[in-house]
Image (cartoon, rainbow, N blue to C red; front, side, top):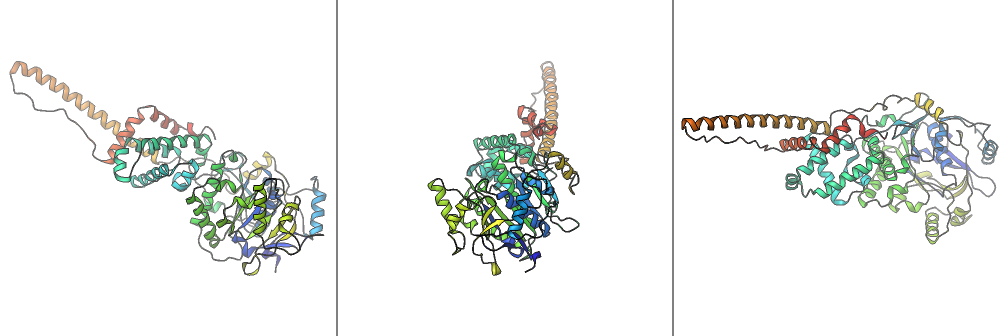
Length: 514
């Protein structure tokens, strides 16, 4: 088989098996990279990203520790590990090993270490948004009602202030909404509003807005045909683990929903690395896990390979784990009964090798070594082999901030996402309706005052003239439509403290944390 059809993962020396390759034809059948902290998972990620890029396959990966930024720079003979890298390449027969850099696009939800990356409230959807805010089932139901009302009212939900304004109106009109959609309790609405505040304090306001990410900017190649390596700066983002996991799940679902079917391509169209995968599944509701399972099962027909990275295979649900055909297992430690159980389960997921005990090998492999099993002809898993992982060609370790800024300045998306756009959406619509309602109310009050004055003048004249009593009544006005109620409600709120808070959002104070 040609070297253009496979990715060289590593080889063997004494006490090791034959060279291990990942066939590009089966690279979209997903994979798992597991192992304890400090056993070499990051380097495995690095060499996979390099290889996919050279094969013309763009990838997306999150950089939790900052080390993956080294992909943008070539390795150097001056590096302290140079001799070891060269020795490893010679041991495993990596004859064309050399140093080179790769085309990298840096992204950052906070816009500091990469180009800003955003989506809208509408694109996130009520399921993932509920997961992000840790809502109860009843609160999730109310959030679904909010999305329905926004659709029926023709309002866009783009950022947090749009959703907050809509929930505010729903609280003022809960009786009418309850009759049409079911119970809309003020306590549940209040809980959602508090969750929105927590999300905003965690930096969520930087994620929601426009311009929203265009997938074409991720699935890109260079003029020479190399796949671009998209790296998300996640060191700060990991301080909000639920936001991190929900963002990656959103991006994965966007790929699933928007990309066309391609069948079984000769190589993936895109590869997605889901690092710290356990954060996605911890305390996740059954509905979300089912969605992840569905995406994992069907997205391979879109030409997308998904690789989960975690410490222990037990972190991934069995229904999803069974779909991960390409596996690289670094060392695991078993200090507790739970660890021992997880180690045994990890060993049982491999096709056994008669030359060694898989469970014992998982404990024995050193840093930069792994047990590898990939899909062979007809998609069958290979016998597990103990493997020395090949050295990376790009820099080991992070690049400095100046080099990062240079890479960002030369990026094909430079200047596209930096300036935030705040077009008319739910908040602006409600604000406009509130202004119209306030003007109408002021006009009505003025007319009522004029009528009152005329009535006083009439009654005063009547005492002298003895005229008939007036039967004219004070005029009243009552809005009989949902839209009128909507506007009047917002007029009242904009006159109070809550309204002033929303106005401050329009002026930009909601985004101070960016």
